[in-house]
Amino acid sequence: MSKPFQSAVVLFESEKKVVDITSGLLTQMVHRRVIWKKGGDGAMHIVVELTHTDDDELITTLICQHGKAATDPIVGYRVCQILCALPVMCDISVTEATVVALWSMSKRAMGAEIDSAQPSEDDDCVPVVLTQVIGAQIGNDVLQNMCLSIPRELESMVKELRETSTQFTTATMHVEVEQGLLPVTPFLKTIGVDRREVLLARSERLGKEAEQLLPLFRDYLATDGRHGAGCNHETFLLKCAVECFARGITDVGEVVTACIVRMAESIDATQGSLLAAVNEYFEPRGMQAEFLGMEDFDPEATLCKVAGWVAERTQNKASVLADEVRRIQANWSKMPITAE
View 1 (cartoon, rainbow, N blue to C red):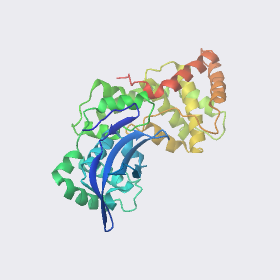
View 2 (view 1 turned 60 degrees about the vertical axis):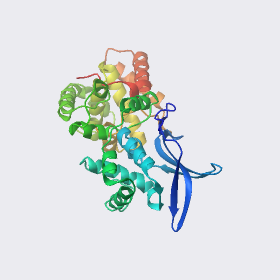
View 3 (view 1 turned 90 degrees about the vertical axis):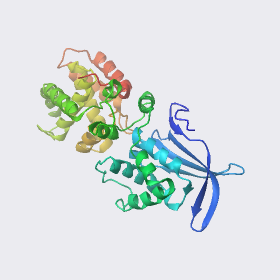
View 4 (view 1 turned 135 degrees about the vertical axis):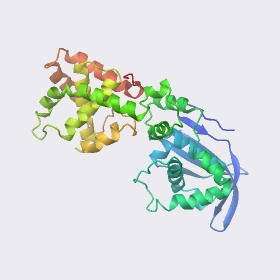
């Protein structure tokens, strides 16, 4: 019996189960527990704890550092289910590569394209070997079903992640919706999950609205001679504006201020590579966008400066703009998509 929700930061915790673990020629009986939780670094991790059966003393803790497995609510659930089903933990099935491969296997089962950024140099080989190893233990039909399973608690999981401001990806949800395996619910719409044609139509419509802000964006970019029309920074600002409009933020002053501050933060975070920031933060199938404070970045000073600049060009007060953008920053990860 699993316990999906022990706290706001634990999405799954299995009970301890006696399994065999093999290492080379040695085999011993241990207790295994699989936990999917938020770590001290603020990110989600899939953890396998192995303890002695006699005194429950910890032998080792195996942590998956591969974010795309642990931060995807559907794939993370599948990985936990498969790990819990393994009656034997051998060398190949207790490494981080296992979780990476299981993530790849689950996406292959859905016919989705596998992301090329895999930590394993033998990405094409590892899933094949593991499919044979794991399939032999739990049965190929069971494995296939687990690779296609959807957690009943999916919406609850996502709510937990949002309420704790934990980053997560909706990538698999989009794939499942397109394949007709996951119905689009009102809640999923609030986190930007919908049919592709709906998302494209909304993006196009909001993009045209965002283009009305180009004069202000270009005026600001003109204060730095390195920027020109159509540059990556301009593209980033337009995408930020679309994200604001999608969440019901429509005041011109607030949107322009929030977008410019977000751009400044991204420049600091990516050391000037805004194209990467655009793809990372605002790809519809990627991570949920968040406003982040950087270690060597003074967000408050930048906010006040930008709010003052925008206030001179719009019918707003600098102090009011700054307060509203602070509110947006504080609540961004919890703000629902409200645009149709």
